[in-house]
Length: 173
Image (cartoon, rainbow, N blue to C red):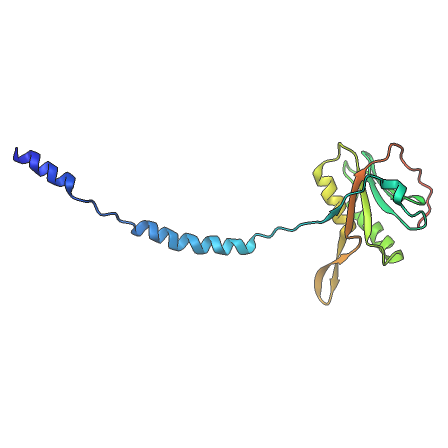
């Protein structure tokens, strides 16, 4: 009977909770998480989608730059005057460097122009869209001993490819 009472006393005694290890973990974990927030950066690109009227609202006298992403080439086009230049695929991929150089040349001729339209088909992948947007929005250059992103055409609109591919006339705006 005495053993039963001893067992009952042991069961009635409150066990102490040792939260020291948990507190140590929190002391280390909270600063690490706070420091990692500094390195996380999210950028947002504002896109201008075409209106329902689309082509009917365009002013024929103004330059309407667009990059058409065809399965075999990138076609830089002026909506009012026709095709400017075609950049065929090389080594299985698009030539984004040549597209960037062409955009720089167009920016020199049209310094006040800020908008451009990228036209894709349904089969174009996301990485192609991002790479074309990067090439037309800005380029890297050195100014005052540091590398900066110089602005080209930051106002990007998206659209579908036309049914008929424009002919390359060789005219530039």
